Amino acid sequence: MNAHLDALTPSIVWRHFRTLCNTPRPSGEEAALVAILEAWADAQGLAHDRDSFGNLRICKPATPGCEQAPGVILQGHLDMVAQANAGHSHDFSRDPISTYVADGWLHADGTTLGADNGMGVAAILAVLEDPTLTHGPLEALFTLEEETSMGGALNLAENWLKGSLLLNLDSEDRGEVYIGCAGGADVVVDAQLPSAALRDDEQLLDLALTGLKGGHSGMDIHQPLGNANRLLVRALRTLEGFDARLVSYQGGTLRNAIPREAFAQVALPGDEMDAAVKALSDLEVTLRAELGSGDSGLSLKATQATGAGKAEPLTLDASAMLVAALHAAPCGVERMSADVPGVVETSNNLGVLSLEAGRLHLCALVRSLHDTAAAAMADRFQALFGLIGARVRVENGYPGWAPNPESALLATFNRRHAALFGQEPAVKVIHAGLECGILGSKYPHLDMISFGPLIRGAHSPDERVELDSVDEFWRMLHALMEDLAQKS
Figure 1 (cartoon, rainbow, N blue to C red):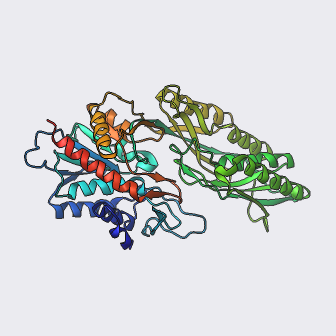
Figure 2: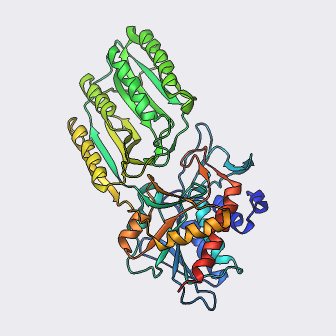
Figure 3: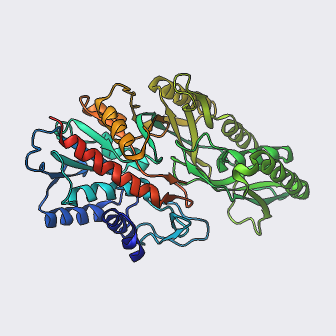
């Protein structure tokens, strides 16, 4: 499948990306791909091993004469975000990603593409394979479960890697190089809330908020995008004026993807139904006007449910308290950086929210350039949801990556970029959670940078990668490797 990728340039990179597209690899299910890469390494005569978590390392000796060059670690993660458009049937555990080219970009058919971080992984494999490349000692590090928990990096073996320079190939802008990133943590809220039987005068109303673009909860958090959970909670607040009680809720699927869709069911007095539906229709107009062209596809639909079934809504007080807490919860950009203009300092994404049979579950992702600010945001969640008796825990915390503008590796990259493309790259700090912060905490001696091709819409079915930028990315990586091979 995806044979058309073999005709793209540079073919040595796209051939490996085709393998990634054809091999299902959602987070936590990377084993099949690891086995393929180990078999490939054996065929190439390359040594490989894994740490106790399952992270894979493939090693290649230096080109003869370059043994004294600094060891380079090429790093990327094997997993991808699994998101599909509503109504699009795709089993990410079994089905390959179907791709197509349009207007100079590679897209997937109704799903995430996996260019994040598949393009970086494909480029690393191309470096290992390329017989024309002059290089020093190489280690290719492929981590697991980056998209769900940073698990591979957090559990990476210490005293395992030997290199002194690390190239993270998980960035998504051409002409830019990253030297710092945000840290973060998952904030998980759980509660069992009181419910009461459906009254004879109550009827059920189904709500569906759809049509949003979604996006990466770090890189896109400052964009004019709607968060489906935030917006549907506004609809629930509107319905409180009609004595509505929340029955169920389901919004978002990943804590690091801005939710595109959310669904809820409420119970309310039958004689309030028409007025409630009219109020929601008016709210849809309001929300569309607020989002404007930034996220113009919003749809808010209210449909009277047929039959009560086994529905048992929350009590009126419990419903009101929950909706109020969700409405007050931090969401989106909290603060812009005072030190790095144009960069988000602290944010939160209301990523996954569900309510079923009175059981509440919320997973939010807090990010910040300052670890203390991320901790303070998480503490606000604990304080807020503690007021409704919920259990709140902070999990999978990971440190940020402090910028080093004086990096010798950065200077080499800048010089080589200027020679290739006529100008130095823009040096950036990213609000996304690159694994560099964690890797640097385990290997403090590493000099690190991150760069990659142009990718847009990551973590959503709109994900796409610009073809020309992949060629530039490969040329830059190839030239940088050769330059580093001359150092000792």
